[in-house]
Length: 345
Image 1: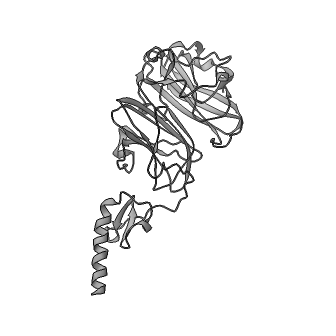
Image 2: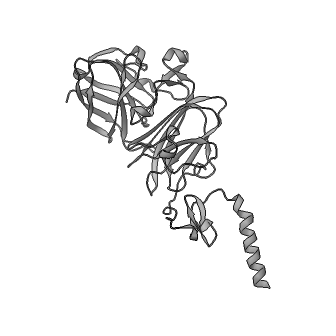
Image 3: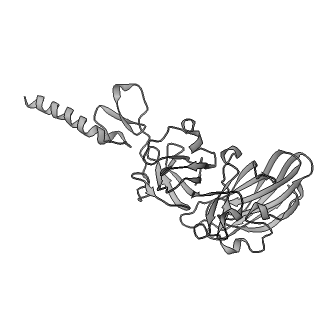
């Protein structure tokens, strides 16, 4: 009788606890007859499956990988880490419909995957199941959602079966087409991504108090923060810039012309200080070429530089003759300005 009583109690205990279990990270959290598969406890006789990923020690202690971390408006998350099987979640309490821009770049290796989902909802397995609100790149994952109408989780998922260090940026706000749409105290900032089809033509109004730019970035700078006021820099193939200061959140825009259809190549050289605590070891630059008439994105390039003085080649193939807007943006944080130079190869 005692043995029968224990078996019955065990069966009842499983039924009572099961509805309360939202997810698992490791199989030790499941019953003896279950394994942790894709963050759910599954009976071992349910078919052949791979167990949850390897053990991973996430050094972040702010709850992003468990209950979620609440963030608002323009946010910058530095020195972040994510383990396979326990994605980080950044929860935003939305008060009205808005536009969303987000990007993530890894310390090394491929960038994590970005998801924008309803608050506390399950994540898709990959971007093929949630294409409009999911982004996965190589060096950078950039996500742009034109309209989001309810509170959401911006989730960062590890790209591989190991701990991934990363830096994350997020903007939520009203859309804009130029600076005048935002008033005198804000800027109209466009999204960054690896592919032009991952962003739209509109930007988001960003207030300087949320994402300030170091004033040293715009001293002796012939560019403009906004495309509509970019100065004419002449023929793109002949463009040469020397030691232009640049910071995170600073967008340098130039008006350029391509006289005949061709491939355009540039040598890009930067000078930067070594990373400080909490900063990624290298610097990533975003270079975008846009239509001068409607700011339709045409060519994107990402260039990665180690600290110190480094050079990379920028190549844009099959560029048609016409007028364009060229944008140079620093992706990740540095404590002070870097300088970049462009010259013919």
